[in-house]
Image 1 (cartoon, rainbow, N blue to C red):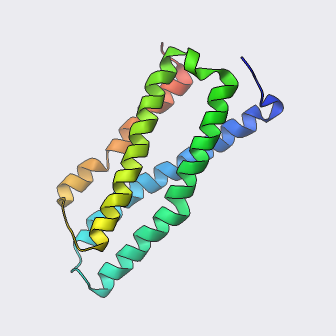
Image 2 (image 1 turned 60 degrees about the vertical axis):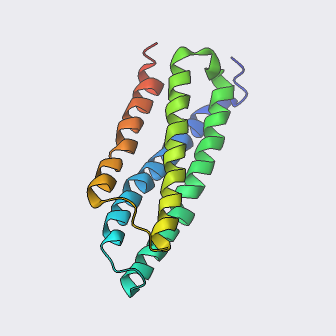
Amino acid sequence: MSWFLGGAYLWVKAAHIIFAIFLMAGLFMMPRFFVYHQETPVGSDEDRKWIEREDKLRRIILNPSIVILWILGLMLMVNIEAWTMPWFHLKLLLVLVLSGYHGWMVGYAKKLARGQRALSDKQLRMINEVPGILAAVVVILAVVKPF
């Protein structure tokens, strides 16, 4: 193992976990915002407020968190040579799926801002379960390292 982070390893790991929490909070909040947003008439004052809320959540929490999380995660990956560990490959795949989920949410927020309501409230509530399930598996892989 390269251990290039030295004494900073635990600080980088702690920051990685903190930004994962921030990202997950945003990933849980945004679909809930979508559910409430879809109930508003297109072009109404309430519609504009939801567009602003979603934009702020994306700009202030989601986007910075995912960028910092990836940077810290890559640092940790290199530090422990994680690519040599079988559990890491599945974890990386799930992190890529979560990143794709983030991208989908950004795109859906833009659709809502244009007045498009492509999904039902029920579908959005079901989609809201995705990040929790994936995060649980990612944590188990990172902590337990089952294989």
